[in-house]
Image 1 (tube, one colour):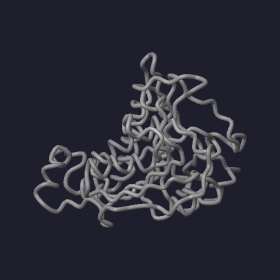
Image 2 (image 1 turned 180 degrees about the vertical axis):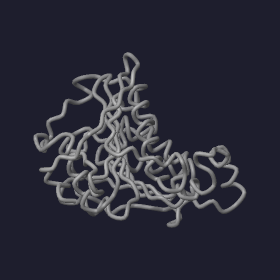
Image 3 (image 1 turned 90 degrees about the vertical axis):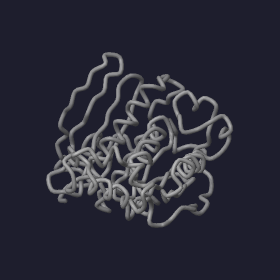
Length: 279
């Protein structure tokens, strides 16, 4: 998974070369593409239209972000912004399936955006090869319908979460450590709902996470967590228009990759949280 806190470089302007209105459902080819979604009562035509009109910001194009981007694109999300300041390394290819050997040395954000354009040219995709932090997170998440965070350090996660609370943007968070995964949707801007900071507190506002290089990671398990994160993100986007649209705010899903097993716990809002208390 990427470490967006390292190897910072001056930020180039964002890039996009796809239609600004995203992948609408106009035309027989679009209807054919999403026919298997549309026939699902839990999604239907209204749900698919909502996905086509949605903008998702993906933080990190690594072991979690890579499959999440692929399945969000496959689901028909009309606009995506991919944020990652890292470059593709040979060691990434074991789990970051959006990349190929030819991408080694290139910007992850750019390479992921190229994959999206090749997969579906109708998706409006922007690559942001920047380091995200408290100084720019608000600008990056502004106007999004959902932020999906798959980065691997607490400082970035907390900066993104705080910005989402302030901008009233829902957050889907997915993370793994060896064979343990954690996936949850947060909406700290809503009454009585927790944010990510309610869960982890203030002790991790530093780049102090263990890395995949130190602990190891199984590519297939990273894929499980990334796909689960995409699924939970789709629940948020479909809220109010289809029965799949149950965001499950504050319910932390704990994946045990060795079991395998899944259990769910509820995160309570921290009444003293400096990000969402009083919201």
